[in-house]
Length: 344
Ligand code: CDV
Image (cartoon, rainbow, N blue to C red; front, side, top):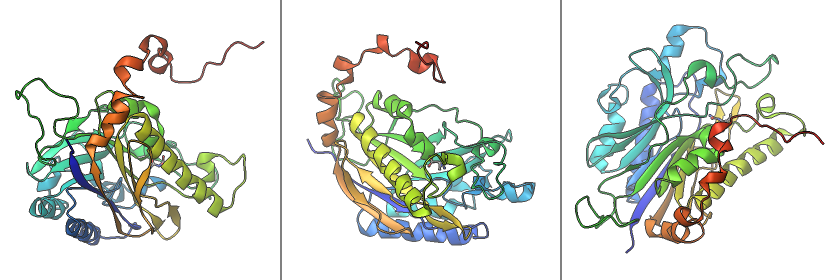
């Protein structure tokens, strides 16, 4: 039976250090309204959607740093974010939003939440697990920094899939006969930016039968100190490569876990000079790009998808139950770094 759902990535153009929260929220609401005209049921916003990607800066002014974080636990009820969630509720669109979270205990996380419009509340939260970059800035004064390890703790909520209610017709519910794989409400997983490059997270979701992975990102087009300079590149070549790697991991991991993925960029020249790639896209369980951003500005990327398309991979090539050999995979959880074979 088809399980059709209309999904969208809301790509944002740059949000600058001096952009006001009011302006950014207005842009996000406008994108939501555009997505609504296409009958979107679910809209994904980028990582740290509400602010500039501040971890590129070494910020010593605590007041400025605090201004990039959400301090409230309840985003839909917090004055700085409420209008977005109110609009989502009004339009009947689920939203997934990335933001910097400051907990009551003072810890910082790079977080995203999933808000269900029909429930009128956040039903799932994810905290970024693979924090890239460094604690201290690079020695090169011209380097593009990535200070996420300085400002955030590694996520502590795991890769926990969840079901989103009221998006597909005729979903099987608890207690209505024995559970049939691929018949219930859609199974979602969230990840944030750098997480998408790590097969481990995808597999954790794959093992929960994930059907749609949502991933917001801020990905530099030019960051030689971060990525290495063994093969010198022009800024354009570096940006092309960065975009290539983004699509490679979204397509490859969607295929290997038989799921759709939606990815949303914050794109363009942020803070006047820091280039972020675009390339927000929706990919299929067979690894194809179904829709893709054409600009590096505010843009809706939309596709109507049928979750039934996940079944082929999950039941054949990637039927985990029949084909996985966990007794041979121990290095994956026992080891972090590389241990090379002994020298000859
Ligand atoms: N925000 C990110 O996590 N960015 C990383 C890179 C650029 C360090 C990414 O994987 O895209």
